[in-house]
Length: 137
Length: 503
Image 1 (spheres, rainbow over the protein chains, first blue to last red):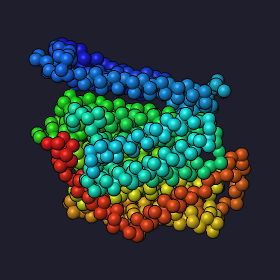
Image 2: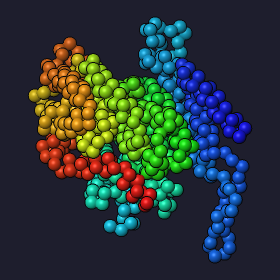
Image 3: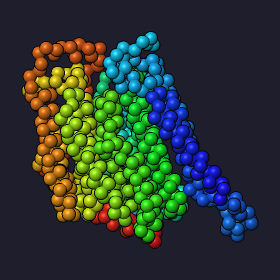
Image 4: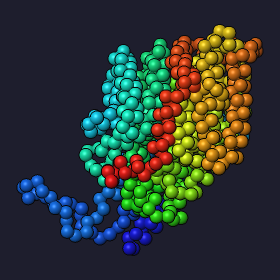
């Protein structure tokens, strides 16, 4: 049971950090927020599979006749691991993509500040005032 | 039909785009071979989609159990009538998009990578339409999202990078919300098979926890579908990529969200009393804001993006009412709407490259020269507004009648009022873009700016789609019969669940 509390506590902590970062203006921080959010959800999937002390879910076979028997004792739920593995791979790929995108935005606009994205011009901010010390490619 | 044929047919709409994408990626340096591969793959997909619809209509449903695992344990692909119809509509639109793009006299690096990505996108879209497993649906969403991110940014224009950044962050949030709901639903029910979820969730009354999960699910899908309070990203990002790609996005990507909401409403949470009200709110808000937004725009594809929101609103209306009659009309409306919106965006691309600008106030004077374009625009635009004899009329008629019969008479007034606003918006576009004489002041400015570009592709395929649509509008009988069978199937999720679970 304490393990469940620890798990839900860390899900909450991760999600809080994630949303704080996602609400920042810098796109790089948004990427960090996304990474944290994926991790929060991965832990949540782990927790939703019901943590319990149980044997490894290995169905014994090997009698030489192709038969297998269901273990007599309680086994752990193997499905959450499969789900988390898939989710990790997906979020890894997407993180790589949006990091590249942030880099591309930096090359193209000279900043990763999303306020600048709004005006589309690297030297002009949302209010239309020209920024000091602008970076030009 | 034996089980093997059923298995293969249900899988083909996923396998053909995968193979096409892989082979055409290998042939990226050989434009001629790549074009041939993409064309063959596209035609094969179209043929597979036609066969799928024919077989699904004959047998009710094709179920493929991947790897031979029986239903709640393995992943199932369930091609029901609604999903198969969406696959066919998507195949028709993507054929028009691919052949329009291939007709371009251009074979650069961007094009070479565009076609593999389009087919990856199609695989994701078809997967999301046909899957019977919620986690698998998440995976297909990510497949189509990744492809759409790259398609959006391919070409590296500044506007594309900015649009893609917004689109990517919003969509990652939407996927995160979807995955969160998947995890919580699994924790609550112990299953992820959608048919099994239907049985478990209708067994007992829903608790507040279930409704919380439902809310996060609707939030995730609503962002994808661009239903109003969640739609701000759409007019920013859809006009950014090349016209064919934005036609594909507009026709298919928001529909994936709508289809997912239909599955939520009719299959997963068919027992929820709250969901119709929630969807009704999303639908009504999208209708009003979409129509008003379209009236206020100057840029052509941005105005069309707002009009796209109204079609999402109408489709959600059917998903919210969820009687057999309204689900029938919703199927008909959504299938034809894929083609209507796609054709409009394809035409918009032709218009933009002909006039050299995306500002409607600088366009004009296209009418006597391009009579066929005006006719095609007329068919699709009046279909959005809901005029007979266009397919939009039959869909809207059924949707509003369904809403009236189900005891929502206010929605009829809302639908009619919004249709009037849509009519004003499409009429304004018609007058600005086609009929008004070209503004003398800067008529050459836009063209001069785009001098270096290759000549615009003729929108032959958009015209063909428009002809098909007016045909459907004049003779809606056969398609409406198919839609009626689809509506009956969607209205009886318990029978679908029994068939999938073999109970």
